[in-house]
Length: 131
Image (cartoon, rainbow, N blue to C red; front, side):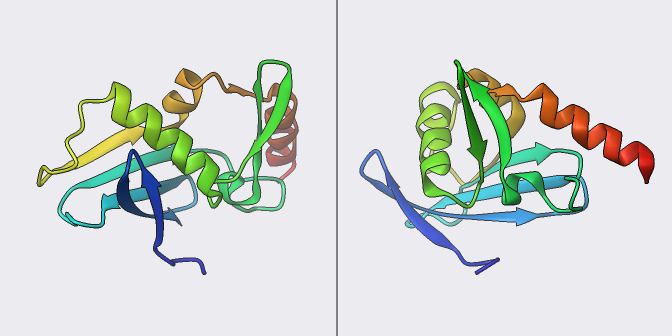
């Protein structure tokens, strides 16, 4: 299921998407319309490895939104839907263009009202010092 291409409907449009880890510090969500595979949106995430050595956006990374802690896992369609609704509204993206777009995922999370959970990040940094 790692490289499985999934479909999601946003604004009455069918989009394909998949989450992938590119290297030890960068992952992305690749999104493209089902009808136009030459238009690609890459939402890039730069991060530190979790205490288990895995990808935090695959294992789940805690963020604060208001007073609530939300664990973001980019394999969950609800987060992809939230990202797409925001990106299509506020970024200059044409789904009919033959173009590739690169979006900063952490910046988008911030624009959506998510704040990094500082305690989790401190624990990760402390663990990395021991390695």
